[in-house]
Image 1 (tube, helix red, strand yellow):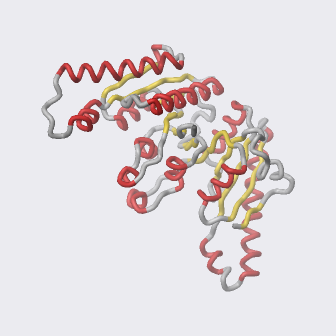
Image 2: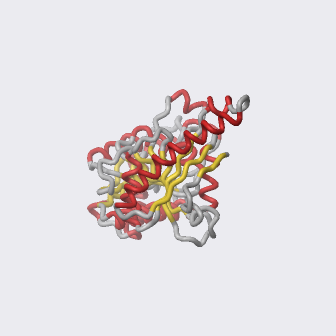
Image 3: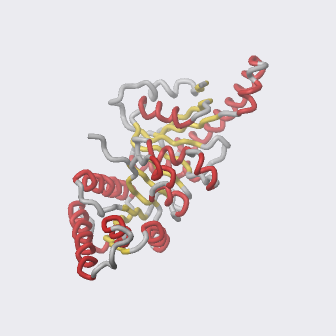
Length: 321
């Protein structure tokens, strides 16, 4: 990998002790285009009072192959291309700097961005990774793991995937929780999700909504089997009441006002999307966990939302014990 750093900008960032001040990491597109993630990153950096580091990953297959036959000439061509990109990125950083954001930038020549992102995670104290959400053809998603999916599934740092910058500083935040299971680790994770959303809303002076979509039919099929007798009214009421109580207890612990709690029955994906659209939500905050085998191939609710939600997503992982 050829890593290119602007003079005197990176010494204070990478390779510094883990106790350093946290910062935000913006993954810029390689197309040298100012995307919605730029405006969102600048707004969040100001709201959170954290420095921002911007990185762009470059890799041209044609140059890489040509370099096998004419390494010196291709190295010069690559350096020229990287200099152009580096200069463009520095200009974007300067615009943010003039608006009060402490910002640094760099361009990295690398074939596999996710591995390089993990280096940033290990070498920097990152509070959040920000990136534009990218659409991928459905067939490609079956056979490959796009960078967005990798970040959602495996990145230990919170990830914010931006779809638009209608409001660079979010005005409405939606926290999604799942109270269908009662294990201690699930309760703890729900609290972590809501705490992250509460903190974000406070920093941005945004309105916070809390939502749980109770898919009782799926719970019944899972617990009782698809060949079970129809759900009795008493059992349905018991399941419903138990979920209501768990949701209310979570909301009480986190101090969410009653008027901002929403318990909906139905299919999670469609109801979450409808709610976000109807309430003009800017960011959905939800948790993601690692999935293996068939679940990984089909994707999780978070991954489905990535391609259907009418707003940006903020995904967190369970805190490691």
